[in-house]
Length: 383
Ligand SMILES: Cc1cc2nc3c(=O)[nH]c(=O)nc-3n(C[C@H](O)[C@H](O)[C@H](O)COP(=O)(O)OP(=O)(O)OC[C@H]3O[C@@H](n4cnc5c(N)ncnc54)[C@H](O)[C@@H]3O)c2cc1C
Image (tube, rainbow, N blue to C red; front, side, top):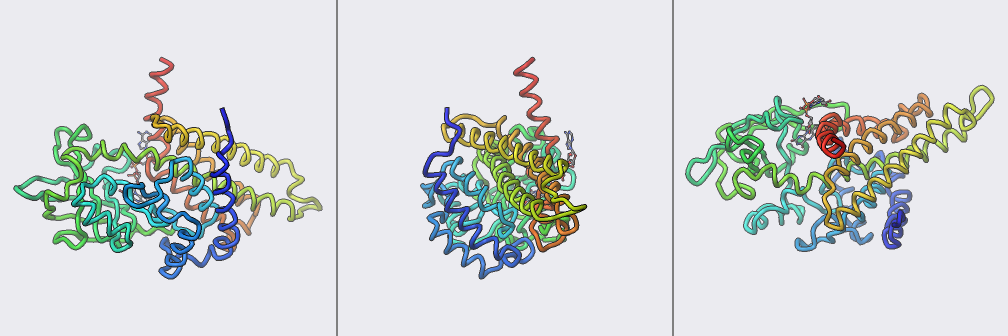
């Protein structure tokens, strides 16, 4: 049993650490326009990804990418998230695509996946509704088959990247009786199709600007159904675990940076004639961050290695997301506290980490909902 990263991943980690320190952190407040990369930064970053040998690291080999294993990807996600230079929510970083798109059939891949990978089309994932967020069984959007097409009606909200999207991956009910057990399907819906309306941009605590969208009698060609009718939930299971590990790996990057910032500041700042670093109240915060980082690293590397060995990591993924999101938020909160007023300013990345990590505890599965799912396993295993 080894608890160390393999040598090649250790090297990858060091290379990325240098890149982030030298090239990303110095410009981290200038790279984004809202939640999106500035176009000139995106071009520069793509060139850097090629230089680093990481272009399309998250794209499977059969689609022309590097097809890195999950353990290797956790290293990339952790290191890139030590900085606030990159968008918080963007699977397309370094030339990727959202995971549903790898499940398209050949014809759909040619029309939708390939152009996304070539940077010619943009897409957004549309599942959440006013009455159906963490409980998708309450979903109302309905797609009714009529001959060679479906007619889609419904409203979605909190849809990231909707404004730029050329097409949406829409989750909708196709059989009301079956519901989540075979009654929900995924469709590719062109953003310029008649009946698709972007209703309202939503302002949040974070810099994200998701949208409310309306679908009214939108005719979706039957060939735009992903997989089989009723497959919507089954398809999602194939990538949802890796998304949870991504959250946790991001948390590792943030705790690491918060430790670096907090230790430096505590070693420098003097109050009441003593450095903050010499105060037990501050030391305990630092020790908690350090311990959580160690725990999280073990959890993430273990889960990712298991996944790469072809094993099921459903339960590990729940734990990683719960622990990673909450402990990285706590680290940002403690780091802010140690910095006092300076921690609240935009001169440092702490306030962005704090805002983003607060949102992570809600998005892609709120902590309570993941705990509810994990509880079923705990009750079974120890019952
Ligand atoms: C910045 C941002 C970007 C997003 N991007 C997208 C996107 O691109 N596409 C998309 O489809 N969606 C997106 N979402 C939506 C996001 O996934 C949902 O907000 C999330 O799933 C939670 O759903 P909800 O807001 O409806 O909360 P609800 O489901 O109403 O839950 C509210 C709260 O109730 C509690 N709760 C719920 N159920 C239980 C339970 N069983 N037991 C105990 N407590 C419970 C939890 O604390 C939860 O936080 C985004 C949201 C945000 C904020």
